[in-house]
Length: 212
Ligand SMILES: C[S@@+](CC[C@H](N)C(=O)[O-])C[C@H]1O[C@@H](n2cnc3c(N)ncnc32)[C@H](O)[C@@H]1O
Image (cartoon, rainbow, N blue to C red; front, side):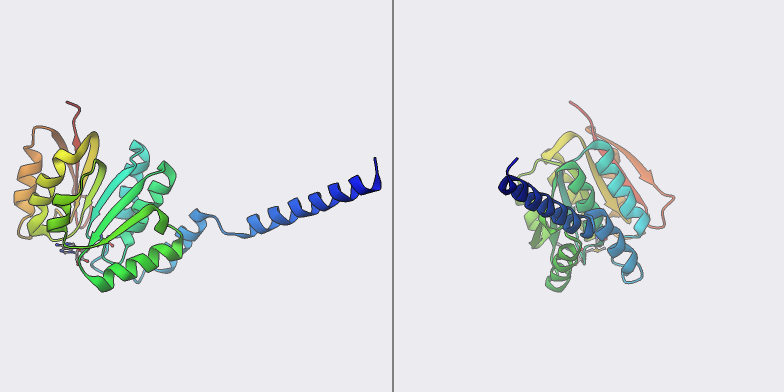
């Protein structure tokens, strides 16, 4: 073997070694998300979902391998992080809607910080209008904006959902105007099978669209 060939191989080896060193020094996406969630745990406020509800959304997406998600009510992005994190595993994408500019911008910043922004299409808009316009299809929906409109959100989205898809709604344990009407509608809808997680402080309804 010539000296020249040995030198080239040696240089290539050193290069490969350096690349491995750089790659292993970067925290993984999971590490980034976990440390961000832990660090900011006390900063999420009443508007944001509790951690365990985030875990529930994450588990639902992973379990059913959902890829086309919609969130109504981004706020500053706590639930968005959990949903986008799950979608980073399933190869999916999330559309999330927020009407308040400041919260929308904070959410974009938060998702950038954890490296999940590439899985999210952030919309600064009134969901009353935008939900009607979005074409779908969706296989996972999280409804967490104005409760008085829950029923209408569901009626607008239901036809755009895939069979087997899941429509979840937050705070259904709260005595707020619109919750009862939503629950009556979703529970009696012939195409959906609904369960209600009441062991949570806020309550979450989980409705699966049945195959035709
Ligand atoms: C309970 S917070 C959402 C919390 C968020 N899902 C989380 O866990 O981080 C409800 C959000 O819905 C937004 N919202 C209320 N009405 C809306 C509408 N018509 N269109 C879009 N967003 C709306 C509010 O501005 C608020 O930020």
